[in-house]
Image (cartoon, rainbow over all chains, first blue to last red; front, side, top):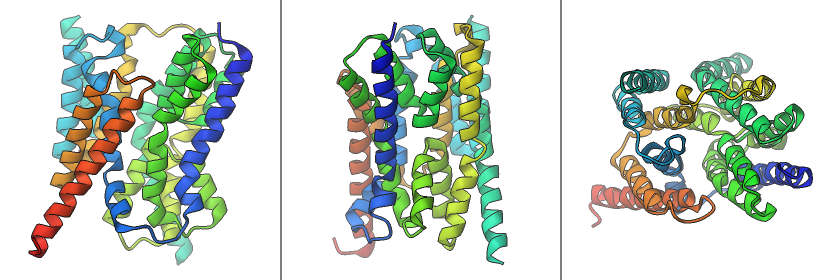
Length: 108
Length: 239
């Protein structure tokens, strides 16, 4: 059972901390010019951080106890492939979803 | 005239953000379900989602709370997962940094993966957008997503029963993120950045407190930026 005091410290601390992270640049830097080298690195934020976040979940999903799952692997590949080919976010999500359920059904 | 273009920017953002409704509903419901399973009340789950609005960090915090990790570790880990928000904030700054402070504060609160990715893609595609149009687009993109995040946290918490594992809802997040990233692979440095980030984060999975994500992300950013610089130098013939 989670201790209520701890829970509220975490909720409030995480809320304040997350806001400060989100406000760090848009708020404090504002329209001051940022150096070219910093902007060059920031261009790759999304394409680097999100794959880093999901790569372990794709290969070793916690839902299967960390065991590589063909259905989830195929679903990830389908979402990526359709996204690359069509540049359509919704299409890629649907491709991933259908592949996941199709494979789970076939393999289940 | 300006009002019209700002309004249409908001509507375009709304339309471009709408596909994420499909993901936010299961994702938020799942958080609500897991939160009540962990012993949180419906109100506590809702406040959690209202105050933090960051799924990955919320799941991280909840898991560590259940493991009775020390409070500081819970906070540090969840904030590490959210460090990418600072990077998002930094990369949004050249586009909306001159907007009024209250708009930037509201945009900061509403900076989530979906609003960020959709907006960056649009800002890069249409460099002629004015700052008010960009801000309107950003708020438009977040409008179909964030309210549902609150609502379905409550729905999930109220349902309170466990969704069968066979629904495989755990995989809604990887699929969404992949679908979001794939259209962003416009240049070789983008692809290399993603590849390096994946390899390094996989190698760093053993690093405690979810720091592997940050380490992988930074490695990918360094690789992408370095390659971009090299390619640009070659192009200029300065090499």
